Length: 267
Image (tube, rainbow, N blue to C red; front, side, top):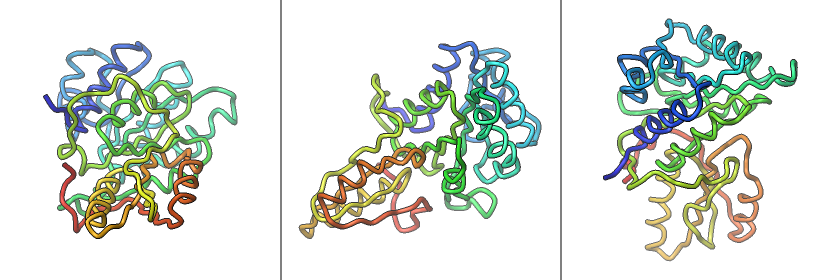
């Protein structure tokens, strides 16, 4: 039985709640409604009192998360859309990101951001803010491109003592599937070679990994062997893997995240 990218995120949250009593989920409509994309479906019933609906205030959501982290909890904060996280931007970059350096106290919060454009998403539900957050010291920015990474990296995010921005491309939620969840996690902060090649390196992340793989497959029909590097996290950035790949191929193309207008959903 296959599992979707979205289901992997739900399963990771369920496991985090089951394994650690310090974990709770907080966000708008995450309780009985199950979240805007159903990433918390049925979790409120399974874990009473630990999947909590928040007011429509991202600033308050992050502020409560920071306070709870200071008191020893490990909150998972859901933003309905990445765009709205800018309402809590001050709390994220000036409180959560800097807390350890100001107070020597860890800030183990995970902020889930459904990001990226989809058809019909409109101007307030389509932004990709990962590059902005990657510029602020103290934050880890994860951008999983596979079902397996969505599951294992979310568990790692909750376990880390640093604040994590966990970017989930909405295009992948229902289209991307895997046969099973991983039993061993690939190290966080380590990129992976999604496709080996000798003629060129494409460096990308999240949904664009699948577009790059499709393009590499088409170029292979013409005799070109393109290597695709999935960054997995853009902060920290695994420059060693990128540089080693470029040293082999001699050519580099970096592809940022966007809506792949010309492509088909990933298989």
